[in-house]
Length: 113
Length: 114
Image (tube, rainbow over the protein chains, first blue to last red):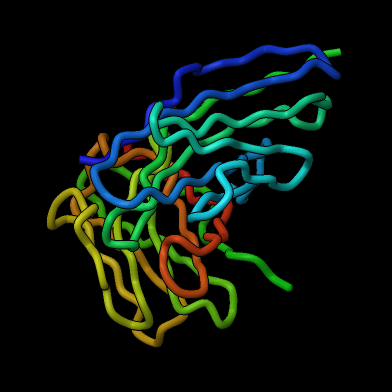
């Protein structure tokens, strides 16, 4: 069975500090991985995705993620966060049939000054 | 251009009642998805349409849930004999092609069953 685990439910961080949001997956088939962000009172939007090729993926708003097959991880990183990055972040895995995403429970990133 | 819209934004109903939730996808998107998000959880897949047909309805929890997309655009999620456990935010998304393409999500409909 396929699954996604986000290891931290909440991550508090100060403005301009680096941040890493952790995501591990389980899948016995080809892996397609995504990070979505949900800002307060807005719909989910795609930050970045890994389908194949380079394991380091760059996304919008200065975020990047690294696919690590041996550790079955897809951690999201940003070298310097802003107050505006405060949001809920979801890691997701494409299901085998290509018909849906399997989401983790989410990580709340809270950036304070 | 316009994004995915969902109506109503909030729906309060009583246990046992029937509800319909509507989704207007982005024009031209052939794929449409319904997800359900309970408090403290990530979105959970319900059903996927490619055009007018339900290509994957494996996420529907039971036969009280049904969805249609008769003209390949607007979709309606229908829940019969609602139960308190159906309370959640129902999300709709659309995309070109399948799930590995970027999915554009609507703001959701918050359903509360009393």
